[in-house]
Length: 337
Image 1 (cartoon, rainbow, N blue to C red):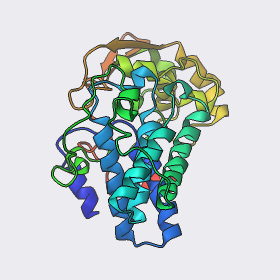
Image 2: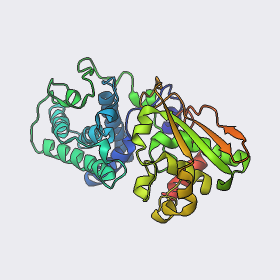
Image 3: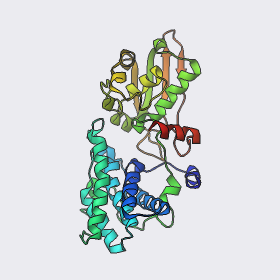
Image 4: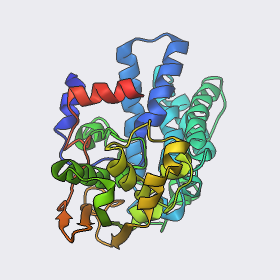
């Protein structure tokens, strides 16, 4: 609780990707294997987060736009860093662990909306732990496998505008305190979370029923639209990357949760009939704190009687470090999972 309180006061946005989806299983599994304390687990998580943030923030451009899945790419190296911390590897072997992991890092945004998306994240955990164990047993790697001209940072850089020199921030200006953690409230792509908040807010404020809706206009950033690739999803996997489904679920069920990520619900007539009523518009402006997103999302709902409802700009999703969930809401999410 004290740590989460510190995170909530963070001044800026977050790093690219979903650190906990890789780091939590990594530190729990490896921590149990090597029998460490809870404090050691937290230290390992921070080591992984700092490694991830250091790598992702050294590039000006958005890795998704080149096709990389940052959670799988940077997550592999971050998991290795966390495992190296748990094993108390010395500097030389820890460096080798990161170098080994750099050659194992992979994951494609092109596989979003399929079983391979979570699979490649799971492999990031596995590969990171394997890299650390191999380094502990004496396997070597280049000491500059991350920053070399043919190393990881330049290899995955969308435009080559990557900084490969200079000190790391850890120990002076901790990324985790500066950028914090965002908790995903909904089990779908984070690119549509602000939109879900907007639709749920309008639906609750005006007691909307699906039959009332003539059109829903959703304004998103260009990169967000690119990730939400399924305009007419037919399965739960498709629905995770669909703005149309997010809107429909929010209107039909008044929630977007694990219960709605069900093939039967996605294929149901009330949900499917709303897809054609959702119109997506994109903007090119970027959030200075998180360039993957627009400065805000906005939803306008036109009713059958001509009434126009406007959410106004939604800057931070519920669960963002600047708009945190309450303890009750966090507990509800945990119980649902």
